[in-house]
Image 1 (cartoon, rainbow, N blue to C red):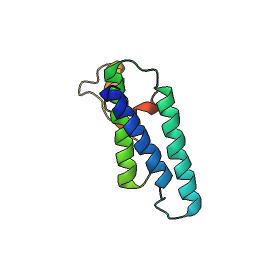
Image 2: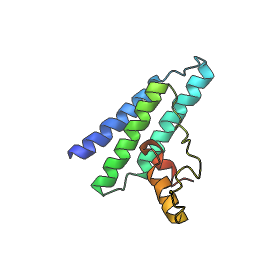
Image 3: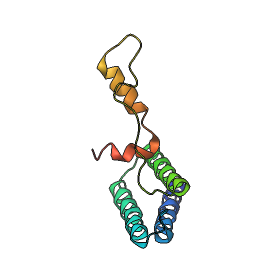
Length: 121
């Protein structure tokens, strides 16, 4: 088994284990149950969606995203992706150059933990 495959499976199991043992920050049983379902369903959906990836760099990028989301969820006790607070004109170039450049900068500035949502929207 390749090292990358082992890393993917290890992270997947770690996320599912986290989902199984998750406790909502509010302490309410209904919140805990819905957050547990969200974590497990989100992991299954994204890992299945990416199961046919062959490019090693793309796989590593997705692993970094998954690990970042897991670490943020554990730290903030919020399993949902954190919103990106970036106003549309926040990256205006000093000379007011083309909108293409602005959209490219905006795309590049998106945090790694939210990139899987780009293809969904």
